[in-house]
Length: 105
Image 1: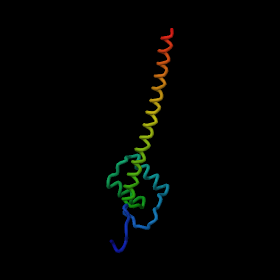
Image 2: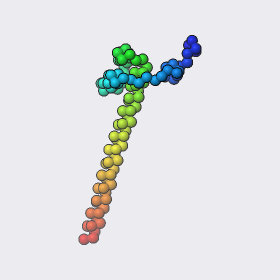
Image 3: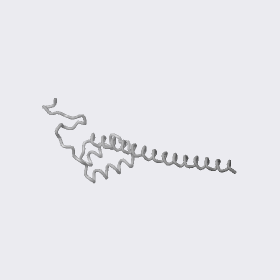
Image 4: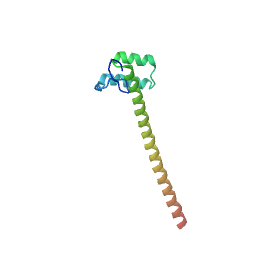
């Protein structure tokens, strides 16, 4: 142990309160994420210095943001496929109806 201090898996001291990012920090991180969702070491260190955060916090924020982005994209893809499936099913039903009506003539 380092001088009796205990640390959690993310490197923070045990017992430390988790601090939320303020709006300005979030805006800056989001703007940087839009520029590129991969984080180079220099950019991470610069963001950490500018925002007054640890570079590990920046890296974890980007990792979590990429995961959220991927989840949202999967939801959009799923909804689009579901809609296409419904349209296809409706067309199939319509064609079956037309075939049936033609046979009755």
